[in-house]
Image 1 (cartoon, rainbow, N blue to C red):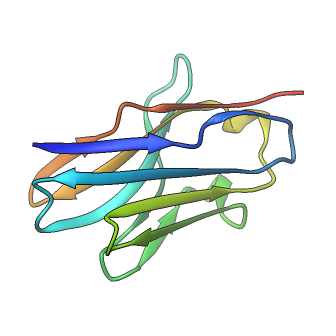
Image 2: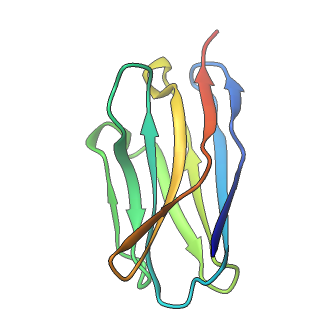
Length: 115
């Protein structure tokens, strides 16, 4: 069993900041890439940012320079620091981890950017 517990979503004004956290537990030996995806209403789920166990990162083009992904391997936790948020960042954000060939997902946390 793998459990992913997300926190940190909410309502924020344009230009504001939020920090998402996702703690993994259970059978996570061999955990590799950790990442964040998002899904807006009527849209497909898309990759926002990912980080390898060695710290290599990749980002969706529209969030580069505004979002920063990081991980604490000792705590099996991944973070997403989001700054200069825009209304188009509004979505449900999902934590994702990969263990071998399998993907595991968190329950999702709502991020709403609105004045």
